[in-house]
Amino acid sequence: MRRRLRHDVLSDLHARGLTSTPTGTGNAFRAGFAVWPMGGLSAQDLDPTADDDGERAVAEGVSVAPYAYFNYTTG
Image (cartoon, rainbow, N blue to C red):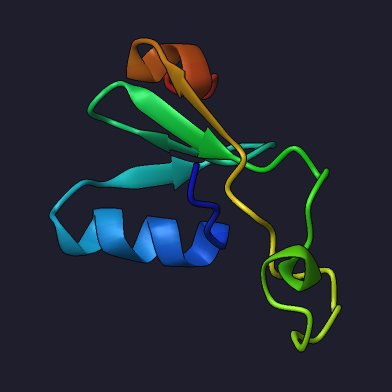
């Protein structure tokens, strides 16, 4: 499995026209999936020379469900 920074994954998906909403744990996409970090990996796990600032989360999980499941504010 190829690991990537969450920001890079979100940028690629948004560039392809997919829209998302930030949730408490990641980003929910209207297409019916969510991308989220679990906190088990850091940017340094992907690149040992990376700054360990804690802001660069690794995309570790993807969930598939209706958009409303992830975005509780839309019900």
